[in-house]
Length: 509
Image (cartoon, rainbow, N blue to C red; front, side, top):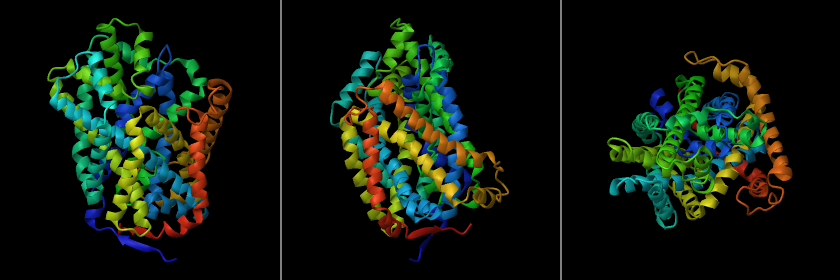
């Protein structure tokens, strides 16, 4: 079968390195930093502190996330296609199912991620129309009343509508949006952190966040959560960088962008944690005179798996700030668009898959939007279901990362480094440590963590419910959903290899 090519004109590719960088930071910086990271740190913290989680999380930044981001950039820029097309060409047609799985995991996350972006939009409008909550009870009522209503379905639709508009216009509009929204969000986060740390009792939260409880490092849950959160934070292994790299120019550089994206993104996560932990400790200790165990208990029960942590505590922070209400409005607007910038990347990925199959862009977008909205309805109606999907497909990012690493090894990692990375004169030179990380550390770490977690879950953590596929955080819930998806993709591998890899992007560098 002869490959078709689409030429990308100037207005359909990234016009500058800054535009590309802000767009790929937009992939990573969003609700994964401001909503997910603080709640995962709270869930993983022990009585003595959450520092052990941070240690594992930083280790995975340099050993897992940055190497995978480099790999995705290199593969995407070389093959100029969707994630399925790229992995099929780089690893071979018989491994097309791997590319399909990577693409599906990102899309499955979009099913509930759009719901979370809807939360952000709702809170923006609520802050515009209502006074800020002055107490924890008032903040909890806002959250609970929203979740028990039909509003989540409407704002889930609103998030999808905004995403449709952005990807309908293509890469140029994505670039323009991120040039405004990402810097604005960073300024708002920094202002919020400074104010949070001036609250009485806030530094107790900071101390807890950075104090390591060393015996936690022998627990597989800490390492598993640290790895999945780092993948969540940075977007490593999602196939999103691979998708955007199809539109990048060679002079934009791979290694510089990968390090800037990874380190900058994790910095935002730490700032967000400072903001949330500082606020929670300050409010509960100074106003309600709670002890540390009581404070931690509330942090870990702000919705299922602390899903409401940011939305319950941020309004209270702004209520204690000078010009708090305008800042709250700006913050939730910025958070909405930060989530939005990530969501449009998740929507562009399956759209690019259908384009590579020969479908018109308008039809591809409508199919993607319809599927994401319909399959996101259960998460919009039930927080336990959303938490389950976050858990199942968050852990699946480990497998996705392993598949990306396998693809690069299969393609020839030394050749890729020599021909794609060391030839860029304006880029940083990447050493052989990168090859070792991709070839050895990532596959071994992925396999070891999954086996370690599965074994201890069956024997120690949940011996009486691990086999229940309907339990929110059970092993069987994870394995059964993975099994169904992987079986379908394996059975359809030949058909996908012949029908989903027709068109590649051709860019004149």
